Image (tube, rainbow, N blue to C red; front, side, top):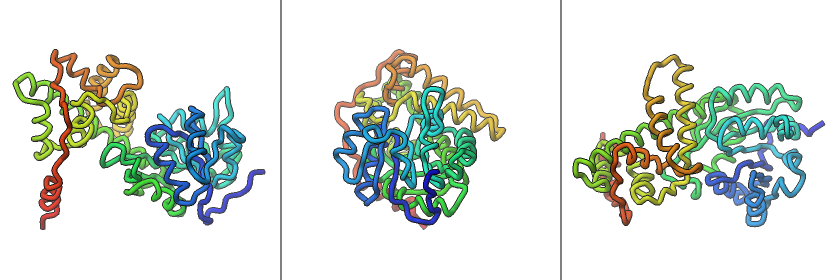
Length: 340
């Protein structure tokens, strides 16, 4: 029988599965704060690199495979979507999941972008598993700027049925993020994540519409971005991704277009579940999917603008050099936003 994990003892050993763009940098902060780390990735070289470069870190691939997680108090997943998370934990017809090797009471924190409904269903399965009392928490990420995860400055939206469990994992989460919000019970974090990405995707569609039609009319796309950033049309793409990676045609924000299309599918399900009629998710998915079908698999989400260029018959003027946003712009904005 697996060892029983105390529900009140501090977390000392953490498993981390998924060392992609965000996962690698977020995981790296844990051993620096004294946690013992067991890492795994489909690309074994990433886990090997982590074990070599970080203190108190071992690779599950080079030790005991799934059983390497047997002494973990907490396991964090950072994977492309919920179906993969489920297979990693519970297995499939070809392989065993790690859940059967975990000790009783282990807390599993899914930081992936998953469906809140799949998350709740998975939580019930884990509670009823042979190991018993495996507790699932959802804690997806968002950011105030791209690659904030590299500096430990991301935002985590947490869904947990238990305040006690949330309090126990919070010190671990604080090592990886600057802002942490307990949104509610299991699934609430992923619900907030899908709404966050829905709003961001909506701004992408409106911005691309505006850039191609504005250029057709004679406006300069970069100057349009500059105006929007000091006006009421400001949004995350104008401040960061389209300013730095879209109009420059670098297309290297680190977030895939396919993932964004997937997220909008989750949004549509969320709206239908809540019996709210809106055509916007379908429209967003239609236009983003058109772009996705034009580019290579794994393309950056900023390449979505290619779909708008195709449909409009124009190629947006390229920004040759990104200029810094003046500090005074934000100082004046904060002064006004915090007015009495």
